Image 1 (cartoon, one colour):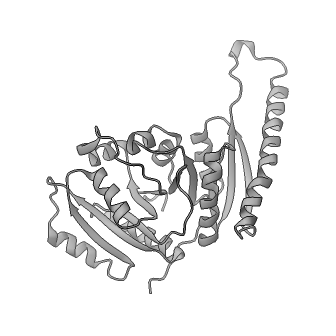
Image 2: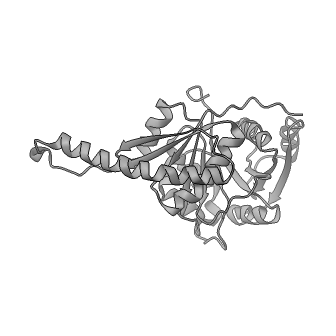
Image 3: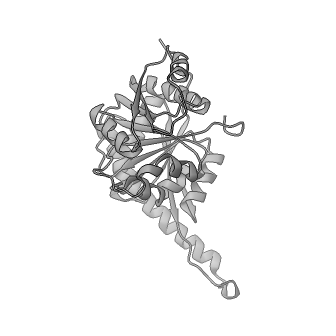
Length: 289
């Protein structure tokens, strides 16, 4: 049996008190329960924009008043989340909260660095045009700017046990390392992984190279699928449906990489929505290893 060394310490859960956030909270709880982690709630608020030449004498009082008001909203919201946790048998999970002023992305970056965050779980409004919507959203900003994995939960998603995880593979060394990390997470859920490589006509990787690469993973709970097709997005969609995927996982890099990866179908609309969570893993470097 594959032995896991993965230890999740703290999950960051940004919330704006919306239905989208509430829907994602159950996933955050389930992740925390399975990965033996605690949850840190994060709420951000905007300060009024004031001309530097007209800063009022009582600016500090204004800030303190606004912060107290936001903290009151936060404190009113926390019991609702605690009731959700209790109703699903996860009242034992430790939940702390963090209130910050300013931009959400910057606040998440600070929280990741200051509070030993291992994972971010956040809701998204839905992805009828998946790529364009995702990268035009705060979730997209989080995925491309944070150094820890980001689990995005579409508003259409309804929690069910994560049994099968899809991993989009390009058979590089960085994909091997990402897959190894995913295996550690999957073992915690007692889930299987299905690796998908959409082999475009322009691909230069050989069948022998693929076979050697996969041989290194023989001890892992992973099935490998190689599908020849030039429409990557449609192939992923079909794979999710046909293989009954509960969570999609991708290794993310710069936006340009994603544009290249999906270039054959960027102008096409998705034929249906992806309504399952997507876990974005980042290439591991010496700074975030």
